[in-house]
Length: 206
Image: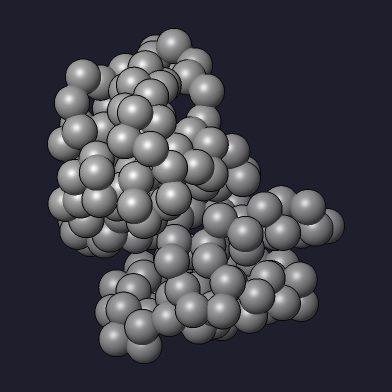
């Protein structure tokens, strides 16, 4: 039997996964958790084969929980199952040790196959996630935005003009323009809208 823990803050989602997985003769859901820290504790106690881990949960996200599980004594495979597929989220999850990354609209039969594959130690990615990950890896490394640059870009996202941003941050309009040029260079874009979109995708603007 492949022993599974479900970690998601939505009871309806956990119930749906449980009903789906327990229809399979070789799969058994041994526990549920509603937060990252709770999931880590359950895994430490039960040492299941696979955890289906939500990405964003109150009280501790799935990435932190994945990292903690990987640092523990169990050999549990973590598969992220989420609605989010930004480049930043995917990279963070993989770097934390997630063996898989699936979206919640993944067909039932694919989810079942993914659980079995994870139990064998195989990597599983939704097709769109795999494409994003390949694109991210192929891009040249760019320096992260500084805290000041993030502050400027958040105000850009709010629709503020350069002058308004300068007033809010107590800097000159010329300094705002300098920050924007550096932001464009780091993100590899040429306009304000693309800068905001790319920063969000990279997980640098939340």
